[in-house]
Image (cartoon, rainbow, N blue to C red; front, top):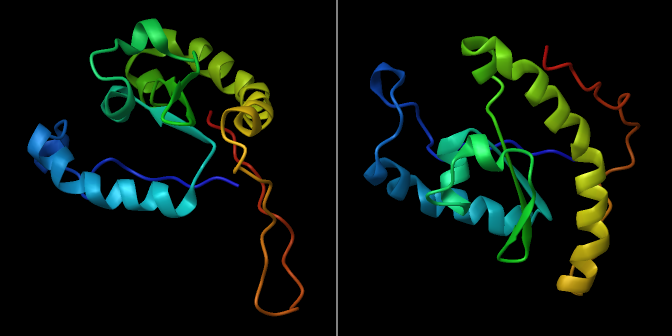
Amino acid sequence: QVFIANVVKCRPPGNRDPLPDELAACAVYLDRQIEVINPQVIVTLGRISMGKYLPGARISEVHGKPVWVRERLIVPMYHPAAALHQPSLKGTLIEDFKRLPAVIEQARKNSRTVNPRVQETKATYDDDAPREDPPEQLSLF
């Protein structure tokens, strides 16, 4: 399962990067979402979200390199829009995304060692109504 969140809950004027006080104002909401969902793996897309877990890191140096932060595997990656602005990043982005399944599987194995409380969970539904076909993963490009 995938859940997508943003570090800020509204885009700043002029599509500029969020300011530190804007990030701080929204952090309580993001932290609560993460607490409720309790993901084993968090993939940060872009340098702004990466900064929440790896302050001071340079995305060009750490992209695609998983690191454990507070019992969660953080995988910093370029934001997909970066490939639109810098076409030379497209191959890098694709390779980083291709490695995600192996990273997620490794997190599943290691999280039980690092945090034995982590257990596999299955989605449950309140009713027995038939479900639609599972959603199809769209290509980034």
